[in-house]
Image (tube, rainbow, N blue to C red; front, side):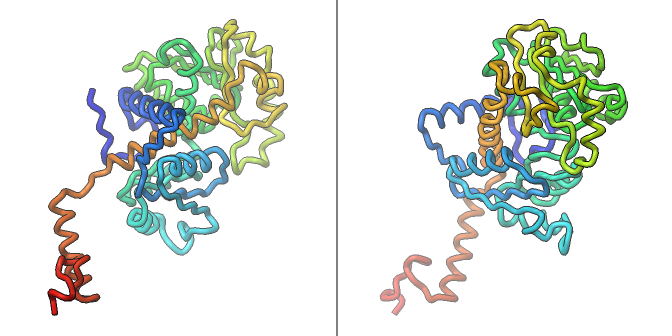
Length: 355
């Protein structure tokens, strides 16, 4: 299948076919191999990228900035304190302005509708760096990490997400596994399982029927059996800090421990965490620092995944034709000559010839 994502943004994996996701993974791997070989491909030379953040970040911001710089691109960072979005200026107006300055916009914030509207009005690619209901760039990095360390195709991999099963990472994994034909189990307390958006379940199961994926939601520890990946996240997302005491009480039985890893029955099971981790709550020190833990490799692959996304979506924008460029240059030359006087650099006529 030929892959052409021209004109698209990266808002959720649900927007992409499995072949397209596969292409993005392979591209990121190729660029990673080039970087390790010391090859500077300069694929973003002359490109300007805006990072628009309403939520704080370590890995997402650093991954996008370093990836852009490694490919000779330029980065501008705007947070809620340094932009007018949602204050003196509407989201639509902000998108239209930024789209005229930048070749792409990465957004990290709260409402999924914000990143969708940025993509609608900006006229340039927009990447979803995290919202309250999705985190697709993280899933690309996670899939790369799994392929590097689990000796089987993704379609044979079982991922068990433990803890808060109705958070953005659980949703993102559910959707990613559905798209790639994987086995996914959301393992957490029934009280939270009942709060999972039914539309997310419906849409992912519709995709799973086509790809052969298995999507399950369970509070039974027997669902851990056969897992290749045990995955977790912090128990309270940004803005939910006041709920931490109640979450600790509810989710402690789903803390990732060495005993939980043993219950998978897989001696090669790996542990992953999108970070930051709250050690002693969502995962024990013993697991986080064990040989089974791939948290740091996973974090490193954030850079790899972002590089691939930046390169593909900025270079696959519709570029002006040769005739359009020539016409624009001719018009510019005339303006420069009118304003500054005819000089050879602009119209090929030297001052001496003109005189």
